[in-house]
Image 1 (cartoon, rainbow, N blue to C red):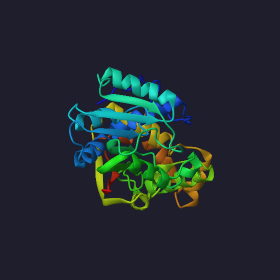
Image 2 (image 1 turned 90 degrees about the horizontal axis):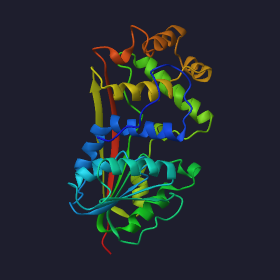
Image 3 (image 1 turned 90 degrees about the vertical axis):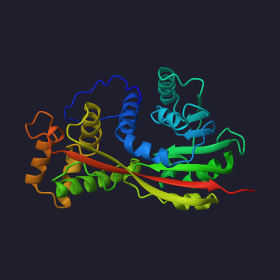
Image 4 (image 1 turned 180 degrees about the horizontal axis):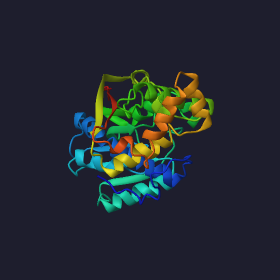
Length: 303
């Protein structure tokens, strides 16, 4: 699909502290994990061959190749992000996959209008960037949606993909443990006032209505896997779900116990999430996981 940067991490438990490079690795692994859902969502979109569009908030470029394939290697894709470092990684992705003639990248912040003319694009796509708490990052999702509508031609499409974390299954057979950990992680992130948008229920249709988009449509798209897992899928779940979200910190453990997780269940969790344990969940032959994404689409009305 795309080129993963060499991953310097092994599957050991411990506290995660994200650097920009680690964040890029996470995003590319996340895109790899969500590829079935992303492909399903893109297949539903009407992206005419030869059309011109924008991947708003493209990050390290994990979806640019999928968009190019959806356009049958025709047309042109703009990609924007507010991080020069992530754009540099995206530029390398573009170069490695021979997309330099069909993909252009520029730096832009969602808090400012896109530096593109009115009615200049056939479509805009954005994935996992807009959020109901975007104000903490310096933008209003409704305002961003209005600006997306501004740069799309009448009849063109605006598409928002949200890889919602709520309702995912990563611990089959351990529903109470997973529900407790997910709730505890959400509480812990909120207490630290850190953005964790994947735990938000986003009112994306409300944003689209505020931007006067028409023909609004919502659909769900699934990423699902079962044993044996590809090593990149194991790496993503271990590092960014088991460790980063459900890491065995005193704060998370206290929250989990506070909402009903017993000490015995906590020890079970430590056992099944340990790559060195004979009971390690991700290498069991009966393992599976499921996560869904939401695609919202709307069209710019004529006139």
